[in-house]
Image (cartoon, rainbow, N blue to C red; front, side, top):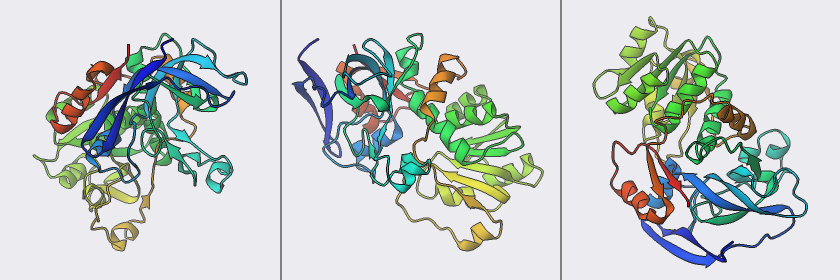
Length: 346
């Protein structure tokens, strides 16, 4: 194994550097050393680069959608071994706070998130505690392995939203996470899923993933169209995966959610919204936060191994790590065809 490696650091918004550094050593016998093979590029990585992620600090190595091979394991490690293909959890937690002891470790008081508050996987090698590493079959391609984390988000947020078969679901934003939420809802037997976006190509893709109705909000009145589709009842659950300033207010406008509906916002926009108590209480809505995932990695990996997900077209743009500048170029120059990037390592 080589002694030096390359890593990508966002020094500050819009300023990056590729460094050559020593391959890290295990800090203790409970850790593993992982050779990276693929890393998804998430919207939050865009926000880190643009200085719009309120959870991030600098300098920072991005990357929380990480897949690779174990190349060294400490003496105490029993869950994985050298040569195993693995997915790395994005969070490190204390295990003792109220949240950790009540099934909410994803919002641990002391949570550290790889690629945001702690360094992530946009580097050739990194170490992690073995308890935060999950084995995945080597039959799963590296391109698909990088998608485990976003599919785990889909599993978690639909569980938070208590999605059930008789729900009528509205998804604002048919990008990567919106498309995954759509698939998660259909897997739970939802009778009707409505996707909304400003991109016809994203909406067309959503149809292929099972959307029952699509709405282009540039061309149609969203609330009026939902009233038409639902015979005046409205939707029972709404997911905001567009996450632009004002998107939450948009989803809460009368006509979209029915009485007793559930609203699940997915973003971290810090912009003030025009939400009133009456918008919530007149319909007794549930506003349900959702962050990352909780106990979703292992079931998501099993479903990925079983081929249960429609992964074709989720990631659209595959970029070799040696061409990492292309990732940042596309962050600065958005391309409609590059809906989600995945970095591939040699």
